[in-house]
Length: 332
Image 1 (spheres, rainbow, N blue to C red):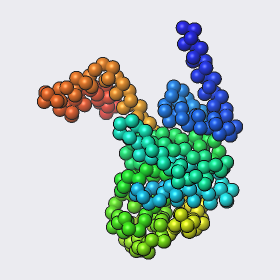
Image 2 (image 1 turned 30 degrees about the horizontal axis):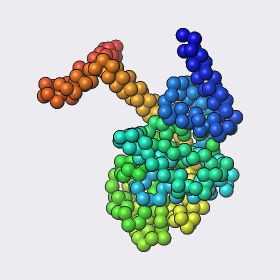
Image 3 (image 1 turned 135 degrees about the vertical axis):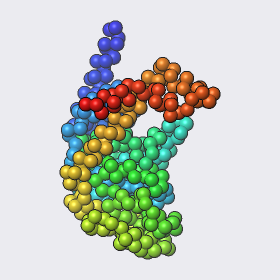
Image 4 (image 1 turned 90 degrees about the horizontal axis):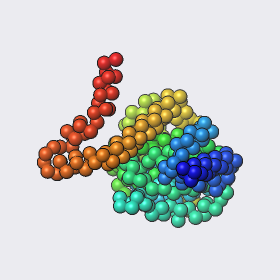
C-alpha cells in the first residue's frame, strides 16, 4: 500500500513540475509533456485541462496535399520566414504509421535540418496512429500544448493521403493545399474533397514544366465553384528548394490570420468537432476494454466466423446500455 501511495505522489509531482516548466517556457518540459500526452500516460487528461485555458492565442496553419508535393520542404521554408518576421513557431509533422508496430519513419526532420536548431522553432514528429483523414486527436492535443507554451504560429503538416485528407480543416485556422505539376493535380482540381477545404492554394515545384497549367486549372475550378460570396482563395506559385515565392506565401498567410476563420460560429463548430472526437474515442476505448475483459468480443467474432450471426446483430447485442439511454432520451 505504501509503495502504491509513493508512486502516485511521484507521478503527481512529475506532472506538476512539467506543467510549471511549460508555463515558464522550458523546452525540455514541453517535449516531455507532449510525449506523455501523446502516449496517453495516466494524468494526461488532467494536464490538458490545466493547459487548455492558457491557449487560444496561436494561429494554426494546416499544410496538406498529395505525397511528394514537397510539404516538408515547404514547411521548412515557411517556418524560417515566419521566424525572420519575429514569430515563434511550433511544427507538428505527421507521418504514416505502421499497421503492425504503430511506429512511423518520422522522416520530416531530415527535410527540416536548417530550422530544427533555431530556438524560435519547436518541431514534433508523430505518427497518424491509424487515424483516417491525415490527422489524429493527438495532433490536436499537441497543437493545444504548443499554443499554451506561447508559440505564435503552429504549423500542422499532415500525412499525404489523397483527396479525402480533410480532417485538418477541423483543427486549423487556415488550410494550405499544396499541389505540384506532373501529378495530375490539374484533374484533381475538378474533383471534390481535398481541393474544397483550402484557404489558399500553393503550386510548389513551380520551376517544373506545367506549373502554369495547374494554376490555370485551380483558377478555373474557383471560377465555377460556389464560395458563398467569399473572396476566392489565392493561388501562389513556389519553389521551396529555391526559396522562391515564400515571401509572397507568408504574406498571404499573415493576411489570412486577420481575415480567416475568426468568426465565433467557426470557432464554436471547431470546439464542437473536438468534443465529438473525444467522446467517440472515449466510448470506443471503454467498449473495447470492457469487451476484451469479458470475452464478448472474441465470442462474437467466433459466432460470425461460424455463420451463426452477423456484425450488425452483434453490434445491436453489445450496445444495450447505449440503445436504452437513447430510447430514454427520445421519450423525455
